[in-house]
Image (cartoon, rainbow, N blue to C red):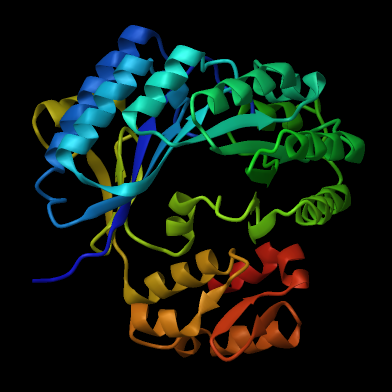
Length: 380
């Protein structure tokens, strides 16, 4: 019998209290009744995959959105019971939920912890109120501090904070203040992203209208370098371009993405990768509802990934990691060397001191991290 390796599970919960100005994810503002009805549909989708996943164990679960923390404690318990009944969840599985500061009282945190969730990712973004207002956020640093304290009281130790640099009006002092604040709060995992202006977002429209101006690219680069300097000096490992953790707190779910592993994705507009096929669920609620009520998978797009495309994905995802790509593991995964497709690109990038190679590994140099987009696009 074929031995299947454990995989990850992503669950998309698209509802938000309000739409942030920079967000281009599929999300909608919904009330409690709509959310509960969506969860019943999600339970039907979970049931459809029960038999398909008989031979696979789940090693990580990630509730993303949207804003999963809008779900009540009792509803989260019910959803987790449905997941555990349908799938083989490994005892040591990392189970994460995205949360907005201010949405998690002690009772909800207790229920989430009892349901099996053991990691929380808070969307802080900044600690300066004017910057939060520009982003369309509804909390402040004090609310975040209270959430961290309550989460720890309920037994959560594995906590992440998302923060953004390059916000219009933000200066280096603001950014350093935010990073030092999180270090002082002893948050063990930080995701530090540069702001992007995605077409269709409110922030993109404001930029086009001249209401706001993007930050200077050189200042953004200095913020990126300053982040590395501060956090590495405080014991954080810079293990991926945008991610830092204390030892033992790397996000195992995201590592599965960067290592180009398979994962099951459920929920409206969710993207998954199973058995060599990348698929996308429908983004239309009516279609999602109709297909599930007819007991059919709510998938709108299926693409079989060719071996060459699979190799390209492994390269540009794996090189995001500080550890880079193991040549031995690459050979085992693809039954060929990465040099078959990319010998020229790799040799040129090594000569430009953007890539570094030893006996079993290739990875970005420090210069390569600074110019990561330029490097990674060579493998697309």
